[in-house]
Picture 1 (cartoon, rainbow, N blue to C red):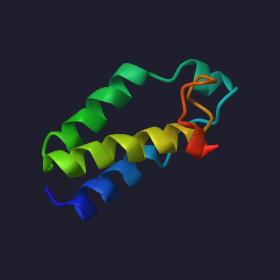
Picture 2 (picture 1 turned 90 degrees about the vertical axis):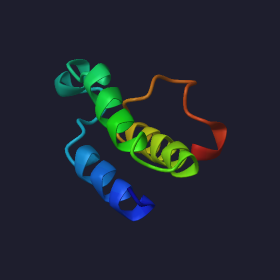
Picture 3 (picture 1 turned 90 degrees about the horizontal axis):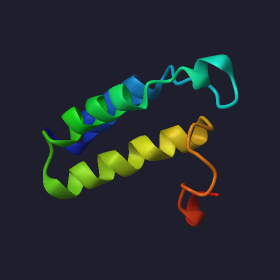
Amino acid sequence: MDRATATALIDQLCRDLPAGGTSEADEFDYGWFRERVGSVAEHCRAADGIYIWQYALWHLDQAGLMPEGIAPLHWT
């Protein structure tokens, strides 16, 4: 799978992420999210797979779903 296709799939997956601090965020299934991102990443070249994981984590951070102190400093 090429990077553009994988990125589009992650965008689609992350489109409806709940906002942090909401009841929907409290019920967010990180395991399900991890499985979906992993499924996309494993069908990419290694370098693109790493990019896909970083991109998905960036989406989690933007939605406020990453615990404090987990996001890399350059994202803040």
